[in-house]
Image (cartoon, rainbow, N blue to C red):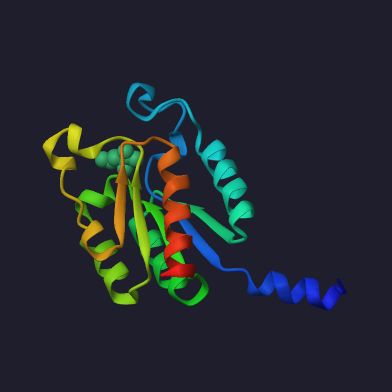
Length: 158
Ligand code: DQA
């Protein structure tokens, strides 16, 4: 394969945004009895492995700031085919993030490491899931990998 072809193939890869919300940078040390011992770096490594298998490219972002997450959603609408996101506590509180997802209409799957329905009642409601394709909750780090597989399948085969 010539260099031009390699470049063209790279440019054709579907790009998916992985968006991690507040406090997820502390995974591994944060309440391990709830979230396990897997770090965010390890989750991202497993996601990259799965992406390579699926032939898609990832953009991975973590932020503790609501506005920064909103801007990533806006950017994703131009750069990416879909989003896998764990907005963490903002899932339950952020009208701004729900509105951003609804405004750009990008296909996305929400992930929660813990089973939010088996925890405090303020976690039972997701403001964002209704404007997304679906949600995976309670499967730990594997949830991200299933979400990526499901999203890519939907985007490629409908
Ligand atoms: C979480 C669940 C949220 O309720 C919580 O605020 C988080 C993490 C999860 O992955 O289980 O920070 O999104």
